[in-house]
Length: 366
Ligand code: HEC
Ligand code: HEC
Image 1: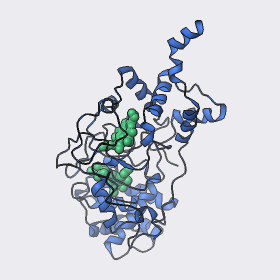
Image 2 (image 1 turned 180 degrees about the vertical axis):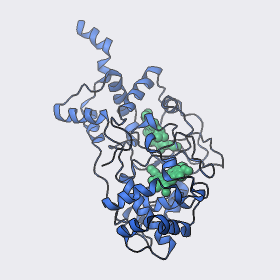
Image 3 (image 1 turned 90 degrees about the vertical axis):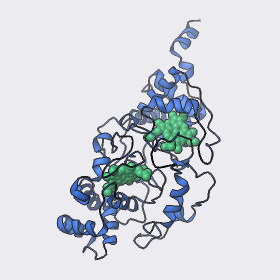
Image 4 (image 1 turned 180 degrees about the horizontal axis):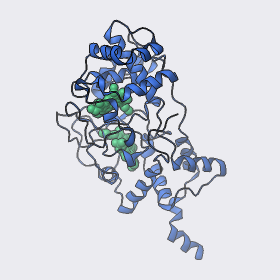
């Protein structure tokens, strides 16, 4: 009787993982080594990464010298900016994602319209509402300020400004690949589970939240040590951004195939590009699909979703509870059902998600 009472009071039964869940948990940690980036021959060179770190916070690349990559990807906020949508020389329509997962991804941006960090970097440098530069201005700024470092990594500054933009991007990517989300308490928990078969590093509420995360289907999409399947799904977030319907991956998949800076392009260091070769831009589930974001460091990266339309983690869980509205294109992922979570169940899930926050300071590098 006393045993039963203890069980009821602590809710331990609700926190206990079954055998299958115990094995799934072990696939969620630790954060692995970066995935190779064949299209960028300097991707893992320390000199390129050090040069990229300088470029990342150099506002001199922007029109008027006002914005660097770090303006929007602020290292103190796990490389986000805390705003609903990005604003620089103009207002964008999408929320700033972190750069902490660059080393593991195949597709960049919420719609995956770039297939490497170096191809991605061309976007903000030249985008009139972000840094507003031109390829000729990028080349000139390299000659004016960075010629020595550039040449130490890449050799003579090329004549073609687009070649310079690509190489600047490759140094930026080398830097981004050294940035990691940082180890969290959850990683220590998994290490203990692996070693001892159990761990008390999660409290009751966090443990119940973890169990719910596994049993409520979150892990179907937010899986692996980065808590993302690196794919795209239409979960039907009601869109609030200006500028019309954002169809996400449906256009991103076409864009990346047409991008001259993609893995098959002239400036790529490899032609071994299986992801791109097998990409089907007409896949019927692409309309309104956005990239599954990582769930590490969520405490520092509000607001949430591709358009920053949900301000708090509780708001995200209310969304998964109710699945409001009907998507304006395609259809919501069929596996999703409203979860009807109670206040306490949402609190448990939030408590668990916060165990994924890095224990050390932001901007942890390898
Ligand atoms: C005005 C704010 C702003 C500036 C400046 C900016 N970014 Fe971004 N960045 C964004 C936004 C917004 C997105 C998402 C855009 C989208 O999905 O269409 C993004 C996406 C990214 C991504 C993709 C991350 C992912 O997981 O898909 C990377 C990498 C990145 N930026 C790196 C950079 C670099 C490098 C620079 C400097 C050359 C830079 N950004 C400058 C706002 C900015
Ligand atoms: C069908 C795949 C799928 C499932 C299942 C799923 N998610 Fe997501 N999740 C996504 C996608 C895709 C986005 C981004 C959607 C967008 O921006 O429009 C997202 C966004 C999020 C975000 C916002 C993160 C950020 O940085 O903006 C959180 C938090 C989140 N999900 C948590 C959960 C939790 C908790 C569950 C289980 C209750 C869950 N997800 C179930 C695919 C999924």
